[in-house]
Length: 129
Image (cartoon, rainbow, N blue to C red; front, side, top):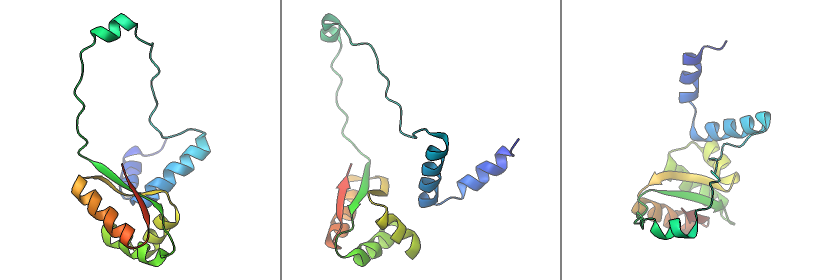
């Protein structure tokens, strides 16, 4: 049996890019998907749906910046990804070439908009979710 504490330490040291690559490798090896499962429930009856209280929709406070394309100026996009993420040259290049890829996760609306503007100015196509 593997030493689980040692395994946790090794996994904690992975970069975001390495963790994403590990996820892909495990998905292929085990034939599974790391996507969150969607629960299929029974459809409520019309009367029950009408009696259900209306929930307020919460405004989204955390956003992800997703690079969807590098465009013609790939070098400029790699430079901007490095500036935004602090990744090394090779890691930033790998992220740019593996589009679509998440550049920033769980950031504020302002930070996401700023990152999007910088990446688009460098020639990339970006999506904020």
